Each structure stands twice: as C-alpha cells, then as structure tokens.
Length: 365
Image 1 (cartoon, rainbow, N blue to C red):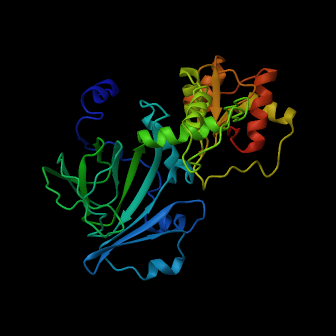
Image 2 (image 1 turned 180 degrees about the vertical axis):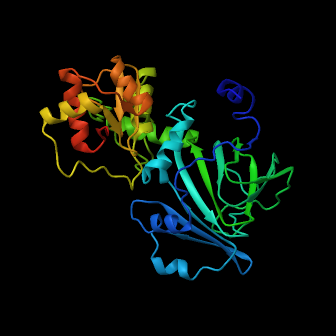
C-alpha cells in the first residue's frame, strides 16, 4: 500500500492491521532494558497494575528494587520518548516521514507479562502499535460511549464493546485513528512500540498562543481618567474604564505570519525534561568545518528542526543565520542529516553554534 492510499483511505478514518509490517527493529527493548530506562531522570515512565479490583498508577523514575516486587501477571511498564534515548529506536520513529514532522510526537515502549494491560481506552491522536516479541490481543470499537470508570487514576472506559479482534505477533502493526476505543492484553511477555502524533486541543493552542503573544506585544500609553467625577457607587467598575481598556486591548493584532511564527516556536519546543549537552571535547571551528566537509552533520535525537515562512526553527527558537531556502538546510531538516558538504560562511557559523549547543554533531565515518 502506498502512503497516498493509506492517508486517503485510513488516516483519521478507520483502523488498519498490517501483518509483518516491521520485523527488523534492532535490539528489542525488553524488560531488562526498559526497566533500566525507567530509572533515568530524563525519561518519563509509568507503571500500571491491576490488583485488588482497582488500577494502580506509579510514575518514575523508579528504583531498581521496585521491579523485584512485581508479580508474574497484570502489570505494564511504559516509557515515553525512547527514541530520544536509543538511536536504533529513533531510526524507527523517522520512518514515518510521510506525515509532517510537525505532527510526529514520540515513540513510547511498553512491556507487559501475560495479562498485562492498561484497560480499554481511547487516544485523542493517531497511533501506530507495533508488536515486538510475544503476542498481544487487541480489541477495537468505534463506539460513541466515552464514559470512564470513576475514581481510578487512569482513564478506563466504563462500557467497552468489542467490534473487531486480532492477535498481533512480532512485527505486526495496528493503526488506530483518534478516539477509536481499543483494549490490548498481553498473551505472552512482549513489547508494544507506540508511535504517537501530536494533536493539541484548541484550548491548548489558544493558551500557548497567548503565552507567545505576551512576550511580543508592546502597547504604548497607560490607563488614565483625567475627567473623573465623584463616585456615588465607588465599588462599581466604571463603564468608562471598561470602554477604555477594551480600546487598549483592541490594539493587539496578529496575522497569518504571526501564527506561523508561533507554530514554529511551539512545535519545536522541547518537553520540560529534555536538555541538550554540548560535546565533551569541542572541536574548534576550523576542525569542525573539516569534519562537516568529510562526514556531514547528524541531528541529535532530541532535536526538532522545522522550517516555514522563510525561517528555520530549532528546539523552540528561531535559528539565526539560517536560510531555509538553502538546499542544505532543507536536507538537514527533512532527512535529519546533512551529507558531507563544504558549507558557506553563514551556514558554517550557524552549524558550529548548534554543535556547541548539542543540537547536532558531525556524522560518523
């Protein structure tokens, strides 16, 4: 199936089961590896258990001893953003480049023993569920009933009604559109690699846009009422004050280019736990230029580089000195690597600063 057919017939519309979609995933991120990642401060992790007739949720980072107390069934360990922690997992995420990077979020990995599940639920975004090792039963439903069980720490559907069911084995992948109810239960120990996509709510976009504006709006003047008269009702907010402030706020303006600039900042903004580290042993600018000419440049797994409106955005900021009309910048953003190149002065200067900031590095041999 071509990407065009998938996007036209399935994307945002209906589920698709793909047998043998991806069997070569490098070293599988099994429980030993995933539990090690769940102990890290720079990883978002959760442990979900079903016991005593209730759901239990814990958030990491975890101590190693916590996992020794787990039973043989009925729990799931989940770690977000594994693509930022393991290069071979990062390579899997960027295979989904037939969808705009502005929509691509991260690759989460969950491990579950037999009976492990997070209950019937739905996601508000598109998701691909890739089975790695073991077998897992997935049931799905297009139901409209979205009521959740009350009093539980996770959102579990109160009345899930299965319409279709499949058992996924290693390499099988299931695509689900937004708000499509699904219920996965591990039949054997195994992992689910979940490729998720960003779908902010209208409220989130509006709130973040107002935050963006507050740092950029500059209105002249100050509130004043030189014609003020004695007040018979001093506790009443004067109509004249409301009118004057309404007039002041009407000066706040934005247009399409303002929105485009907001999206460039917002969509590349790193998550709170993400930090960048420059090289341990810095190359000077001349040595860096030689390395770029010989090996090119590779983006750090945590770096998001997008462009639009004549601007390049990198990790929440405008990339100064970078011109997205330059083919090499487009190549770096679209392919997440730049082939060996003799960069011009302006590009080399911007590349070198990004290298010092830990946003990318010279490619390997």
